[in-house]
Image 1 (cartoon, rainbow, N blue to C red):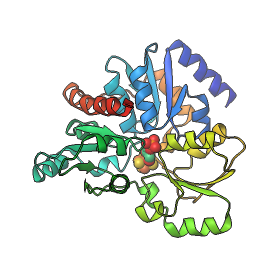
Image 2 (cartoon, rainbow, N blue to C red):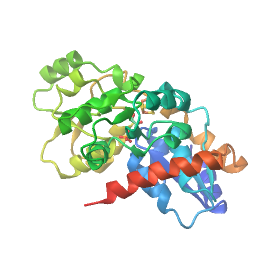
Image 3 (tube, rainbow, N blue to C red):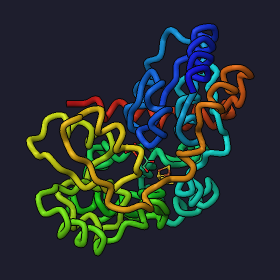
Length: 305
Ligand code: 13P
Ligand code: SF4
């Protein structure tokens, strides 16, 4: 491990590489990254990178694609390009075109957990940290199409007290967490507060004290007086939370909250990626140009006070 880290550190300097990692990455990957964040934080970071020749993205395909769209002149590499997101693959561009045809004139809000082609067919993107703000910014339009995550969509509906037209995608990892597990864990840890991600099912969210994106979870634990939390999102976040708040006791709600795709990145693959400059993630220019409009609109609305 020591020599692997030394090799990675030498290569990242030689290549002028910046390493970005999602909070669901393995602890050792998070620890060597230049920046660790949620999907929104990583998009903002990717849009601001100035002094690097290449970006090594430790996350899943849609995140690396977003970084590539925001950095057309820079190489964006994935240590394992097979790390996809099953939810993102639950809607294709062709299916979205058909969905739009069934609801003429309705704006499309697309969760960043989607392919570049689907973003290109959408009016605005959102992440779990800004979905409520983005939908609210559309104003009082009769219909809004929300793709692909039905549960994030249901969370937005509840916050805004309005209906959306939802695509029936979901995250297979977060789906596994049911309300009965939370009830059981609350009985075992009666002093703990419960945080879950909005990709969990509505009945699961109903059992939680907080429904937050991963970035919002990190912000909350830096400021809270609570000393124990039960965590209902991918297990990689525990490492991020523990670093942000070393004195708090974080307990995972279940052993099934492990995204196999997020765990495909390893230190050995990062080293090979830096050595070989493989695998580059690219998006065709016409698709990237259209997808960028939806991503930039999200960044602009999200930055509003
Ligand atoms: P965040 O938006 O909280 O980073 O979540 C991304 C994701 O893939 C959740 O499963
Ligand atoms: Fe996709 Fe779920 Fe994995 Fe997030 S945790 S990358 S939504 S499969």
